[in-house]
Amino acid sequence: MGISTAVTAFNTKVLPASAAQITFSSMLEDGAFTASTDAAPWINASRDALRGNMCVGIPTETVYGLAANALDASAVQQIFAVKGRPSDNPLIVHVSSIRMLRALYHLPACDDAQKVQPFLGTDNAALEGSALHAALQAAEQTGEWPEIPQAYHDVIRKFWPGALTLIMPRPPCIPIEVLGGHGTTVAVRFPSHTVARAAIAACGLPLAAPSANASGRPSPTLAAHVRHDLDGRLPLIIDSGPCDVGVESTVLDAYSSNAYVDGELVPCILRPGGVTFESLQSLGGAYERLRVYRRDFTSTEMEVNPTTPGMKYRHYSPTAPVYLFVPSDASSASCARQREKMHELLAQQKGKIGVVTVGDMGISGADHVVCVTKDAADLAHRIFAVLRMLDEDEHVDKIFVQGVDESNEGMAVMNRLAKAASHHI
Image (cartoon, rainbow, N blue to C red; front, side, top):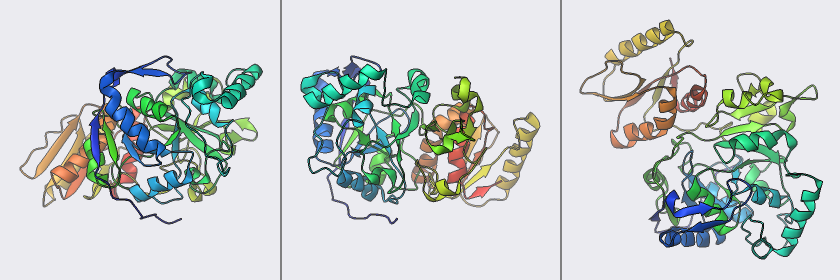
């Protein structure tokens, strides 16, 4: 599919927000919340824009998201247009509570003439409508969370809300545009960021939200990054400071045919992210056999028609070319060889070079801009912000990055760096 380019021009506003302004009644089940009076400007502005099928830049714990009404095809199409994103690249649907997720399976099909009215995702008939309230109550007679595949229940209890996206059956109310024009599953996330959750609950609609950057650029971890890429292309950015995690969510599939081998459930990570492989594997049972896409298996069909973002197109790339120094293993000898090679190539370079290392490598020089991270977790947290700083502020000619072993947080950061890099050393 092509890239949509028709975008309305806006005078983009940036409104400050704080998690301290919001209190939710429930951590998981219910979306009801109270807010202090100083939260009214960003809550009201985001609610009005999102209900008006416009895009809003919102903070999450992973990266900033470009959010729009996931139940309306025209709103979803605006996401692709604002980002310059290929329309066959799927989006993740964000909910504010388990009740909101469950409700999606009781809403009318997206092609029905009557538009879905906003609902809060709370156990309140006056707020979510008597028909939807009754349908949810009736479904509960068959068990807890009957709409959600059983294989996810323990996962949800441990990792939601949080940096984990689940591949779910597509509810009839979700337009095919969210899925990138193909497929029968949808990626769903319940963010832990209080401001993100409140923005979803306040508008009363699930939100489709990829990262709020121009397509192909490093993901935004500050509101300033969003404004740099998308100023004038959306009406509002909610600024809640830096993101805590710094890389996108992990995408887990324990539902589709990709999660089964010879009829047996063998869950798989389709995109490494904020929840580690080791954490998911610790759930036991079927998750002891957890696989990682491209490391343990591949699928021609998923390469052509991906079920989740981050699988098909090059992502996360600054303008300056990125040189990724890949360790052969986790040994100290491999690390020493990696550092020796970086020093050797740096000595041959001309121009201004950005260097990202894990630990101090003793690199200095007037033409070197050095960023030292503590470990793989710190690198994952800072990598997008560092790439943007070197590219947009320092205007370096090249960026050298010391890679890390792919255990724990290293898997997510190496996944992103491998896609950002044009040279692997």
